[in-house]
Length: 429
Image (cartoon, rainbow, N blue to C red; front, side, top):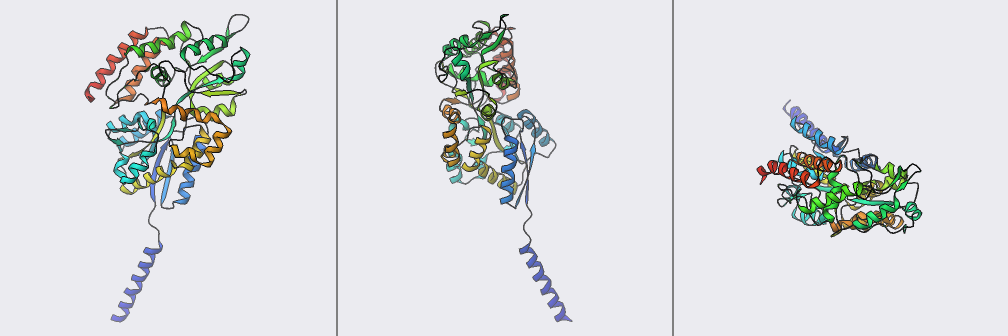
């Protein structure tokens, strides 16, 4: 009887050992928030890439939650975190980095990487994109869905008025002089085509920051606790933007909608437009005329802000989830995947080695405008980002709107905005 019990115990032990070897470890579950309301084929492509990663990594499950716009995404992430159920991973605007740090929601990638990865992987991204991804010597965001604003122009419209269709305006003065020629009116004197369109709805500070950068001034410090809204060069830039409508008559008066700007361009209602390079695939697909893409025009210098979203890893995740999140981010930002993403959407591949892939080399050979935003990174600066970022940008946007609509003079509007920003940010200094 004793021998029988021993044999049974041995058999059970063998079966248990066999099961422990044969049964795979439980997969790590990740919830991934992604802003779907962006230009190009973003949703379709991110879904395809996520499926490809999961199919090759059976130990990871990724639930991709398409959360709406950037604003919707950060709001949903904050709400989920307050409810005790944050995502493990999200693509959120680079400018929301300070907000996420202030809420103690994210961890720096540095804490999850080897020294070699810190040097070779993090060090391999374009420095201009890292300005909105690092603070205090730590890397909190990894560039992914990144962009800069660029100038698009209608080559047929240029040729129609005697301008060289292959030469865009290179300076502020040229944008005015070109615009004056490009404005077209009907028999009753109504404008049917404006010279240029710079959107001022939604997040007007971003495109306006192109003008301030070109005028040689930065809107905030790298610690996110000071702004310089009332600098005379900022005032001059805002006066120029107002003058495009009120003095020179080359741009429609009042607030210009962001969302309808590409449509206005396609329909011939504007000969030039400023918008994100994230619209590049959209324009290539839908413009019924030959078009050009150029860096934004210069005054004291070339310049544009970077924009778009970063990957963030949330603090309230297990060690296994953080490890899996890092692995997924490293994979999806690797050259082959980054090339696929850029070709599908028009967003700027965030690393120099991405542009050495056969896919991107073939793409830019066939479509050279894809290089414009990448080349503009040499002159790019960090997008406006501070602590209490949504409050600060709302204050600044309100000042811009007040001047654009003629409610306040640029100097008065910006002085008031600076005073309000100082009251909020003094606690972070």
